[in-house]
Length: 408
Image (cartoon, rainbow, N blue to C red):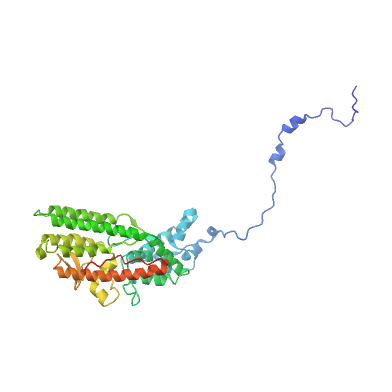
């Protein structure tokens, strides 16, 4: 007989406690916890994509000339740069559909603006800046007259082409005009310095010096080959000239993002070497002189940045002596032939001292010396301006003028 007292309320069939523990509680599993709503954070961003389209989109119009015009409006996209819109479309599909037309329109406007800059069209570039100063913050790839692909802002493109005034205290050229408007923007000085340092990063001078040395070696090599050639048809000389031309053409491949677009010391040295070899190459009627003038000097001229071509058109001597801003014309003295005419190198080179014209070959050693000296004075004055700008923007030790006086 058990010693446990009988409990009338006791369950005669008690549950197995181990089974009860193992048995899942389906009711509890199905229950949802009613958590209290969290307070809304007032700093949460406004739902940008919920704004009405009329407030987001711009009005795009194509005029009779086929030009894309973005009409001024008070909506939000008017205050967004092309890069802002591009960033928005990268993170969501909705802005991509909303701003599709705006992106294309903005891109066309930016390309048109930067093409004016790279082609030395100063008045047209300034007119576009007046209508929309935000263009000064934009970058896009454009091609110059020499066929170089260049990526940068308007200020960076102008600096890379050395489109600066030889006398900045007296008149502006492209870079000074752009800088004036750039400094008027909010945080303009900071933006100017940022763009400058991107174009000319620390140590870029070493790359420029390496290019100058490489160019000089290539040029001296081809002049030596022309001098050495004894064949009647100058077969070896022409072969060396073709190699030199191929060397220069390879320099414009790819995309230029930093530094200068052209090594003007190459042209100075070409004039110097022509002078030194003038008599050895047969004088006025010498075939070797003709070859050197058209196929070497003329070929190098093809790679001039536009502002340098415009200075040649205005006459290098007058640019320095009269201290006037460039006329920005590219037409030679016949009023119809462009400096970048396709016949350059094929039949002529551009001579710029007393007249801005094209001739079949250099007319004499004294003209060559005079042109070289006038060219050097233009380039040296531009470089002095760039040296001063570098010391202002970067606070670094001013570099020496990279151009050398070739004619003593």
